[in-house]
Length: 205
Ligand code: MD3
Ligand code: FE
Image (tube, rainbow, N blue to C red):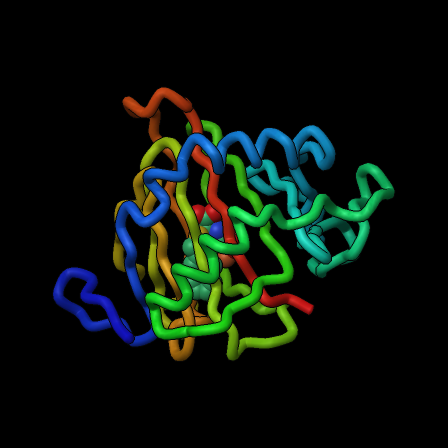
């Protein structure tokens, strides 16, 4: 499994453009229902800064960041309640995408939902708070298109760029799972939503 990024073969990366396009309205409705139970919030970094994107989660746990560090928590620190359940639609979309990418039987236990307003970004980082790196991460973009930055195995590797639009799905697994990645500041654009959501399905526990 590999995809070509500007002619460079990238093992472990599988792009599925538009795979979620038909489900966009239903996915947005589910995000609204989740946010009614677990509101979007801007989290603090261990260093005392603020993340740029607002976040919430659904599933058996949620990714949280605060002065104590990054981790997965089974209850939402904002509400004191368990995170909302992963909707069937989310589960089936993530499973279908992973299957198409060569990861049959993917059963995510967490979906982290990022909400970017224009200007919001995400610095280059690795996702390494999950217990099992053999499982892939499935990402679903909704709303405004963003320039995704795809780094290498080392922080200093110059990132390549990949435009992610609404309904685009990408699966990152195997040798790509621990690569550095981030997103450039979101620019305003023609999508009526006026912002961008990103769902990342993970096997975290
Ligand atoms: C490659 N989110 O939530 S999605 C994140 O657009 C995150 O919100 C970005 O990075 C966003 O951690 C990028 C694409 C993505 C997600 C996870 C990855 C790419 C990845 C994990 C490993 C390698
Ligand atoms: Fe990430």
